[in-house]
Length: 305
Image (cartoon, rainbow, N blue to C red):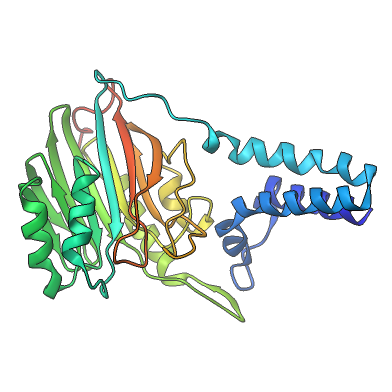
């Protein structure tokens, strides 16, 4: 009965997450940040039920298994093979860390990923010249604002800097039409005795969401260290209007023991297919790479002013 009770509780948390209040301490966001790991709890309960030979517990575990598969099972499915005729961009996103001791090695690793766009955060002045030098051969077009930067194989136009030093916007002239590319590094969150401290992050997410909502270019790709998972309601202003990755967990932080993906690739008028992590660099984050397929019916053009 103990196993059955915990199993029902896990199913309730995963399936009825919206019912968990976000105060005090933004407990809802905290649970959402680590929600995929509820599957590990189910596995442990399964082992306990076997050891205790609990038939009731094993039957009860069918409920959280079904709920978890419903919510996260799709992320485990293999992504479709690359379609050479698709309007596809490969996007690489990486918080390179302002304490990175090997920016050249990091840049070479990102080049090896073969992306069309490379978004970086925590680009500090001493390392900027290194990134420009190594990435410049494969990515002749780039823009840097504050500590974030975008490197592109395709020309950039209408570079508009956001109102803070950790965000930028540029229009990428791809072979498939214009794409508004946003790079952002949202404020950090802290977990303490009082819960999750995420107010600055949440406010920045709302500001960024307003900017995306007002974007005239139909196709939008947002890349960045958002300091939150896609399940975190604090990122609702973004995830409510942008498509998230359909395949892959790609836990990116911390690099030594990845527990959550806070490095994100989101899109509008486009599908974010499989997202994956790349090998570790000199950063405390893992790089992620995603395939973004532009919608041929919606991606081109602009909204009427």
